Image 1 (spheres, rainbow, N blue to C red):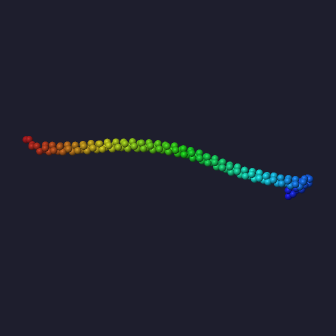
Image 2 (cartoon, rainbow, N blue to C red):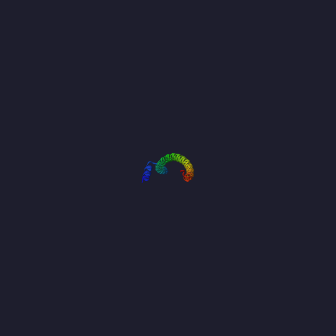
Image 3 (cartoon, helix red, strand yellow):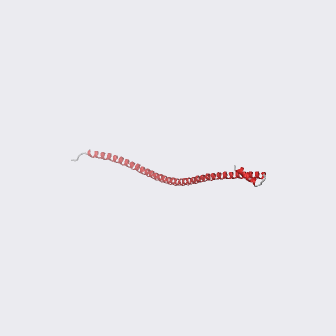
Length: 142
């Protein structure tokens, strides 16, 4: 309807029909270009919104990554401390084992000395009993 009205207005302005057709074609091209500009503007708005969502996701990923890096660092420090503690326990256990070995050797030496003393005592006891028996078999002096 608009183009029909416009065409009749232009004809009344005493333009040639070829000029009117060219002008109408030019206005139609302008309208198509305006539609394309609007479509591109909508497309750009969608792209900006998508880019904004990607940027927010990237920011969230960076935050999560920083948190994971901090946790990894904390775990490495904790692991290092646990290794040091385990080494200290191992050293202490080795020292206790060495002390137990020395105590065991000392105990074996004392048991050996005790056996020697018992053997000597038994030997002395036998000599004492023999001497006592000899003494009791002596003739009585009147």
